Length: 148
View 1 (cartoon, rainbow, N blue to C red):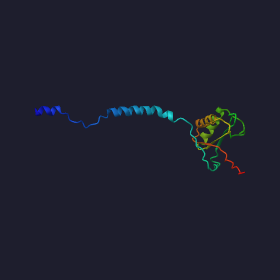
View 2 (cartoon, rainbow, N blue to C red):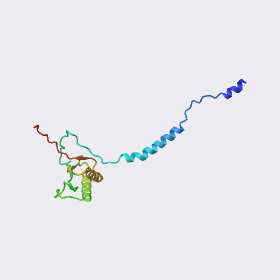
View 3 (tube, helix red, strand yellow):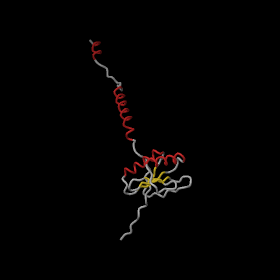
């Protein structure tokens, strides 16, 4: 009788079954692989600091200045006619040529205060497409008002 009681009593299992955990990890991996590219969209910019010093330019690293006016027209500060508006395609072509010739050229964007933010982002995306690794924004120093 004692012999039959031993078989009826079960031994405790001290192993962990990890197969369900592997399945969960694979599902999470697939989810993250699908969603990760969607999270990294945008235009890379280097925003100016509040107490930033003026950018020093040299002959070797003279910045490429690109402006957008209140009507959304683009201007690129090169050549004989820097005050002539250019189309988006012309801007892309000229910026691409400059950045291929001098890849370390800093690119600075100046925009009219009344230009919608979306138009500035489109301009920055064009410059990024042309090969600009970093894009800076041109700002004016705030004018201190005198107390009355």
